[in-house]
Length: 177
Ligand SMILES: [Fe+2]
Ligand SMILES: [Fe+2]
Image (cartoon, rainbow, N blue to C red; front, side, top):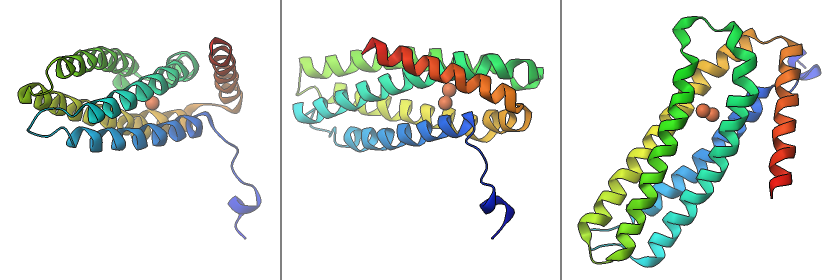
């Protein structure tokens, strides 16, 4: 038995965030499959329903996840980062993704207005797949760079601080339901 097996590493804040990334990726993959079904003959209502439902779930999960990063991890990590890492860029990513999600919803509505509008369906498919790509890229960037830095830099006390922030956000979110 190795030392790591006898003394398993404690759960870290980045483990929680990575776990959420994997769940978001699963939903994105389901969304991609639904988008691919928006054929060249316009949008079938049941496919549009599926696309809209998945997009809503992703929005909700991403909103909660982004709060954990912006109000939980980033403030504690910020003092450790040198200018090269551009933490604000990650928050800007979140804003961009939110704006795109709003436009994506408009594109769904356009498809609903005229089911035989093949151009609208193709645009929705193209725009949707592009957003999926951008979100995946964002998750990869955090997994491979930002979280690595967090795991390297944060002390046990700072990680406890991040966990406490997560706990407050989860309690707040549960209270809002
Ligand atoms: Fe993020
Ligand atoms: Fe993230």
